[in-house]
Image (cartoon, rainbow, N blue to C red; front, side, top):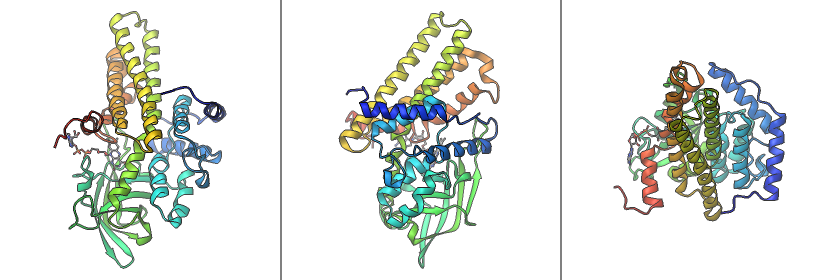
Length: 379
Ligand SMILES: Cc1cc2nc3c(=O)[nH]c(=O)nc-3n(C[C@H](O)[C@H](O)[C@H](O)COP(=O)(O)OP(=O)(O)OC[C@H]3O[C@@H](n4cnc5c(N)ncnc54)[C@H](O)[C@@H]3O)c2cc1C
């Protein structure tokens, strides 16, 4: 593949880089999650004002109709500028594109604009206590009642639910049907009595995600997305969109963390130590391979119209490399990297979840074995 950007891509990158140069997100709030979220939300508003919040969305919905390469450039430049991920990242990357694919004209009209401006935040209510990797075994029930549905069940690991107005909810509407067939995808209003959000405290001390207790929540018929019983297909659209854009942002952030570590090692005159240099060289190599593999995944999407199984390889490599990198930082910097509330201890602890979120490493390895290498199925 050719990794040279075309003239229009270079022009796009330069315009974007100039925009980031002129729009400083301001100081990142520390030790206050609500203030941190408000900071990301305000920055998304600025992006939206100038048409940068969702470059991959078609212009009629407020995007720029960006190509996949331009989308990748957007996330690379976002990461490079040190700006935060937009607050409504799940709305922009998951809910918006899923509504564009499956939504009625009324649903598109109602939901897309407030996603873009971060006026209405979205969360993803897929995982349950007994349904994560095997999502199709979920048990949350939705029962029709007149022109509404009554929902009862529990979701877990729901990132950002505490800030969300809407939830992409997959629930079982036909318990008699085979497990992939009896599901329906709903757009659930979180602001109702039947929905309780309880934050889960993470190893880092923050509460990015939550438990969701749903007890008699009501969803009108008009908020079924893609038809009753079609939830699995609609959910796949959401899942396919999950990794494609973020891969570029994540690999740039990993590069930044590695550069910071190299700078700190240099300050301590550690770069001449052959063992340390060797380890940093290996991490540098992995970061480069990751970048190139992410671009290779892009080529697959351009060729076949959808993300291929190679995306699993990038996610697996990224989580493994980020965990190795943050562990090495702790080994290298010693106790000062382990101070509670410090930057490096945060990076080390947060990286633990990388091999679980967005698909566990074991499941990704199965996908790579079966669909990339063509090995026999594990089951
Ligand atoms: C930071 C973070 C944010 C998240 N945000 C969200 C969110 O916003 N919305 C949401 O719906 N979910 C979210 N999740 C949940 C995430 O998608 C699930 O944790 C993930 O899918 C794994 O499911 P599980 O935790 O139920 O583990 P399980 O599926 O129960 O897996 C347990 C263990 O068994 C292994 N395993 C399972 N099946 C296989 C298999 N076939 N072959 C080999 N090994 C297997 C797994 O790899 C794992 O080690 C988040 C998770 C994290 C860590």
